Image 1 (tube, protein in one colour):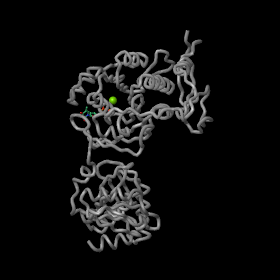
Image 2 (cartoon, helix red, strand yellow):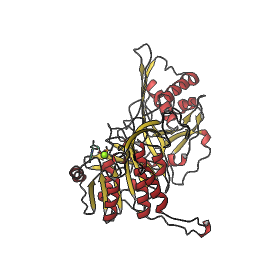
Image 3 (spheres, helix red, strand yellow):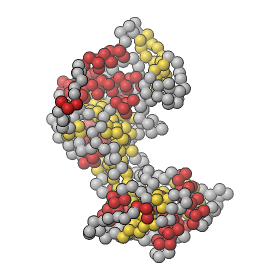
Image 4 (tube, helix red, strand yellow):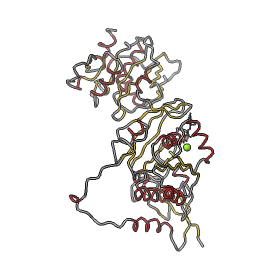
Length: 460
Ligand code: TYD
Ligand code: MG
């Protein structure tokens, strides 16, 4: 009879130990060991998984020059944003992990894919919802497809058997944390369970050349729940992010064995599913009013995708003993640093002012080029001096008040011009910029924040 035993598994690398350890000797991470109950019997199921893997594909070493160049077969998904995130379509036999917080729209995105993709048979498996619930969602999405099969099941062996029987050309599994195997030794969602089920899925995908999407949940800290190992095992990792108070959703490519990781796709959640956003800058800037002070537009870059975003600052006399510094969508420490630079290097007095900073649209951008627009919006609010509507910014601000060069300035300038901006302020250190002949945008090259004040604020 099977007995229950407790072991501890490192969530970062999957090493196990009989006792809890604070510092993993294998990967060096701290506090990653988690307790797990496993069933033990003479016929160790964990060994069986490994045995299956070892014996499934007998192959021999091959000399590099004798290997034929393979052509990646890709399936176009009818969703331009998803195609972009995957590096140009779905690669046959690849395993893709889609991770995101609950309620962000993971199930919606993949059901939409299942309904839209032009394949003979698609199997959508859910361990979280019944077939009826998924049908209601599909009706909401308003796409009808004869080729989509729904299956409510959590047993991975049965799922893969059914997928093989059906000859599904695409398999979607919602979610990896709900799965359990026939030879299961621990509960669904545990590290060893996730690891073993993923092995089975990868084996199935490679053997049958079926692309598989796996949905994964995210912990409070923003990591994919389960072993870090999971991310190493799959071919592609996509993160679905967004602020629940806004309808925008960002699909970010974190890892891609078949494409670039600099991709970023945008969607808007509507009452009938997710709609790809082709021109995000237009959408993010449409609510701008030129007469308001404290607003500046930044030409930022997310991956390789230029995005124009609006930074809004509100600076006012404080009524508290300690002035407030609150920022949304921008690092608070970076804001404090920029305020210190403005105070020390340029003589602006923010010491007795409350400062609120907001990146409009609920999009979190991690681009140093945002600094210059933040500084411009802070000065604009402090002086109550609205900036000209058709000017935008792209530059990093250093501790001595210098404006530093940022990457891919050509892409940023092109996007600013495409959105109808007449001038862009950038760093002097970006050097000579060659623009296309038809380009009319004025490039203002700045050395320091003082120069920004003199050139942009004094004149306007
Ligand atoms: P869901 O795909 O269930 O999220 P996840 O699988 O990531 O947990 O989507 C959740 C939210 O999306 C839910 O609050 C309802 C909303 N929604 C829409 O706004 N429009 C729609 O067409 C659909 C299907 C869902
Ligand atoms: Mg879901």
